Amino acid sequence: MTILGIDIGGSGVKGAPVDPARGELLAERVRVPTPQPADVDSVIEAVAEVAAQFDGFGSIGVTFPGVVVDGVTRSAANVDKSWVDAPAAQLFTERLGKPVTVLNDADAAGVAEVAFGAGRDQSGLIMMLTFGTGIGSALFLDGVLIPNTEFGHLELGGADAELLAADRAREVEDLSWEQWAARVERYLRHVEMLLSPRLFIVGGGVSKKSEKFFPLLDIRTPIVPATLLNNAGIIGAAIAAGQAAAGPGPQDPGAIQVDAAEPAPQA
Ligand code: BGC
Image (cartoon, rainbow, N blue to C red):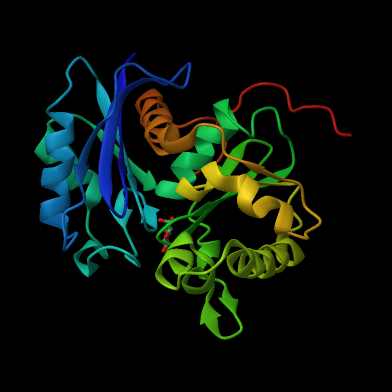
């Protein structure tokens, strides 16, 4: 079954048809700029423009850079505030004429990494963090997503952590890799103190430059870059839409089971 995956980012709305069973794009992805302001109506039109480039898909998965509960967007840190409490899944479904599943962008990227990328066959508690315009988080226990964790907004020294340590802070403040890595290290140490994950998977555009800052990080938790690069959100959105089409699983209907395989043996 082909599913269209669409990733709404701070600068671009990207989409491609996906084979969710293999975690692979079936065509080259299409990108349109994210409208500014990124209000509900304009973003829906941008998503429709991407969807119009493809056919042959049964349903659509869309990522959103904020909290999404039951298809309703509940926060909007880096997009227009018209998204707060918008019935996003319903609005997309009406506009696109096909069933649409909406989920948080970091959750989607994590779902893809856990199913097909850096988190594959990892049991226990693992955490995906995306460093981009903001900091997104996705937490998994034995392959099951605990959605909408929002650990990018932990408070660090009185400030919102993503304002200090997102990749945007590095760019806007023109920080050296050493300066930025010191902030990321402080953030990761705080997260590991709170959660003791078994593994950090780092995504977002900056994960392609992991060799510039991973060696500067002094933390206890193993840390690896995401392996699906810019396509993790698109693939994860399609996986979530495929699972929604299949109906709720035996476990928590709010959680997304990404790996039905036996958990890997504990070390
Ligand atoms: C939002 C998260 C999102 C992250 C990355 C944060 O500001 O609150 O929901 O996952 O940015 O886009």
